Image (cartoon, rainbow, N blue to C red):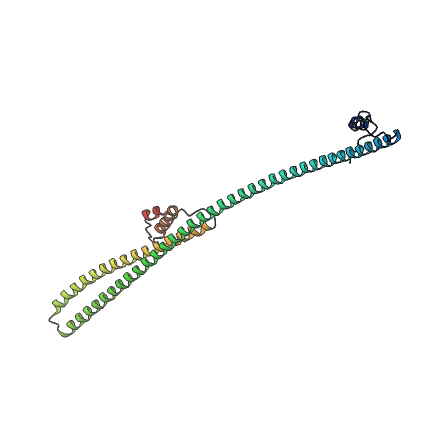
Length: 263
């Protein structure tokens, strides 16, 4: 509590007190129509009491003003802390919003990558399904060709048995047997040509089936390398290398350039 100096001449309390004293003196100055029973000593005590009450009043006012000033400073400090807290809260909210935006962007990127990976997996599965269907069709064709080859072999054996029976039963038919032998030779030649053509067809179908399997394996390898974060396989270069190796080894896997470019 701040107390003003009561004896300082420049103190506002003394100035106000002097004014109050003059006012008090003038207010209690006896008039002709007032009671003159109060003596000088009573008047002095009365004035001293008034001065003490005024001093107490001004001291209380000063104390209240000091308390109000202290409360104002405390309120200013509270407001400053509140502003700082609001600023920190806004910064925290802004930082949280930025982190949420970055997290959302990362989630969107991961979802896009996952969708692309799913599309790649679907494409690989479709290629594998088509390759399996192609292999199944090739196997059916090979079974039919083998059946035809066995049928032709049976016919050949039947013709040979017939020729033998004709040669054993009648020697007169030697010329006919020779003719039949010539026909048999021609038939053998045709059969050999047919067998050669059939074997070529079988080899081609096997090559096609092998190519389908190679392409499926390449697609799977490329997908695995893509999932592992490696560079994808260049199917065109790999197909050229396979073609050169097949030319050297004589295996003969003709790789389709159009099929490779599509990938």
